[in-house]
Image (cartoon, rainbow, N blue to C red; front, top):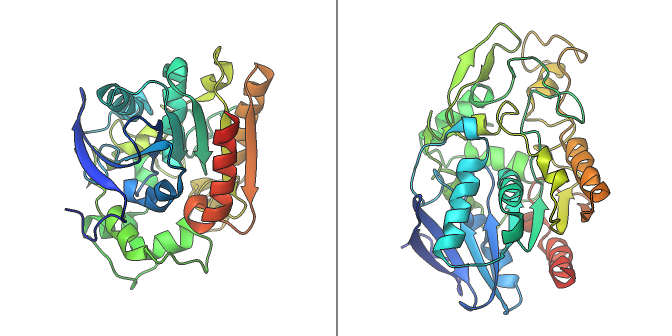
Amino acid sequence: MLNPPLLDGLEASIVQTARLRTHIITRGPADGEPIIFVHGNLSAARFWEETMLALPSRYRAIAIDMRGYGRSEAAPVDATRGMRDFSDDLFALVEALELDRPHLVGWSLGGCVVLQYAIDHPDRVASLTLSATGSPYGFGGTRDLEGTPTTPDYAGSGGGVANPELARRVAAGDRSDENPFSPRNVMNAMYFKPPFRSPREDVFVDEILTTVHDEQNWPGDAVPVSNWPGVAPGVRGVNNALSPKYCNLSAFAELTRPVPVLWIRGDSDLIVSDSSMSDIGTLGGLGLVPGWPGADAFPSQPMVSQTRAVLDRYVTNGGRYQEVVLAECGHSPHIEQPEAFREAFFTFLEQV
């Protein structure tokens, strides 16, 4: 039993797939048109509850907890596979539920997961909605629109650049607001554009704290290197899976069976941005990480521009996408501006 309970109209269950035990939240008729919602890093399926309830009744909404998050099995993440542990888990769930071509909605990390799914199974997806999606070239350590690594060892990306105080407080189950790096304060400062505060803040904090904190899951391991900032990706855990050393989703632009794409984002996103406040190049330029070698040697990763460049190539090759930018919105459009998010999302679904 979830505490507090799910919003009325939603149900929770565990599905044993061919890969792992997956916790899902569902709403709608069993024979409805399926939509699967995939959450971001340091979050879980419950972040989607209100969006699911707002869907027209003909849809079957399914929100998943990825491995190591929420109430799904805490299976280890092989970072050398990039997003494929997560996307293979998703495909195993699709198979277990006997779905055909679901619509996929991915937020942040979840956007990278559904892009990988579409690359691997383009004939098994009806549409993609990318909400504040991560870059096709992962997170950290690249310098241009082609995803060129800033250094050959991909320094400045992976598990070693996670904020250690945030990691400590996640591991300790900290629900307080006493420190800038408590999960609650990080969520309110980074997931949302202040002064927005969700009335479901306590639920969201509890869900962040379900994240399995170790080298196999979040944030992962790291290796010391001589290049600034002194750490490079290891081979285990989600943040390493997001490193451009292992995560490259640019092949999406070459799909021979195009999938309709909605890309929706906030104009004030501090996490996924061309000057992300979670990117080591940005933080170095602000003097927050000592020893920064300068913008020529280690610029901010142009995350949004990288996504647009890949999607533009996708259009050139026969695909189509729509970009919707919400003003005064941060990293969580579906929570911060639910009406605008739903208008764009529901209109897109009608057009697919």
